[in-house]
Length: 54
Image (cartoon, rainbow, N blue to C red; front, side, top):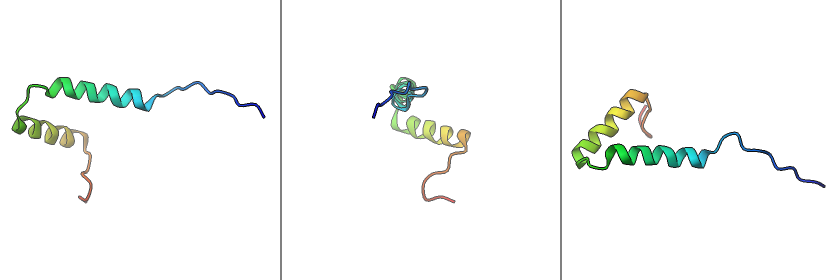
């Protein structure tokens, strides 16, 4: 039986690494308080619900 190699159209690992690198650049010189505010704002803007919250 022959196997065929399917060309990737989406690379989830590359996307995750790109996003992580972008966040690292944006937050590299922030204090802990600034980082908490950054995370809270990003979660509010994206309408993402935290785990365990209704």
